[in-house]
Length: 220
Image 1 (cartoon, rainbow, N blue to C red):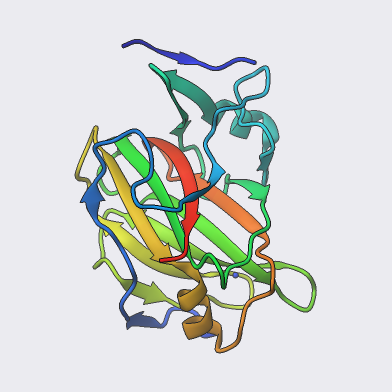
Image 2: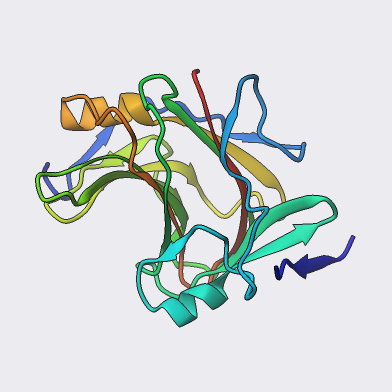
């Protein structure tokens, strides 16, 4: 079926290992698996230029809007991305109760990545803000190197990073990730997050071509 655009934040550098809830499975269906999934974003709506509706560019808005475009593949809508800068991410304010819905799920599909580029893509889950109201996030990363489950703690101006998937495979297949964002936040920060989460951000590494579709929540 053809594809078409739809127009319409510890000690920095400390590496630890701990168990992260990761599915690591290839997702063969067209939606997130498991019961009672609350969808945060399905990328079914776009601005006239194809940029996902309700999302914002963190920097270089004209370039970012070209790098993140909603596409359709049959009846399935998803975000098609081609990374330019690993700081050029998109974000969306979405509130939910992270204690009631601790697990965040999403699916992504790697299309191509330049060897040695490092970061393939990352989902930032923000459950709180600091005293200056700066979002405090956990960065869940697909990286070319490093063991899945590795944690790199963040510094004053950066979030903690967890590798959820490592390597350049699979290519061309949807894979589903499941992370317990609430549990990870408590382990990293030693306190409860805010009663309502701040939102979600996403970035694709330089030169990486990747698709991401539904982002959802579940109680387990």
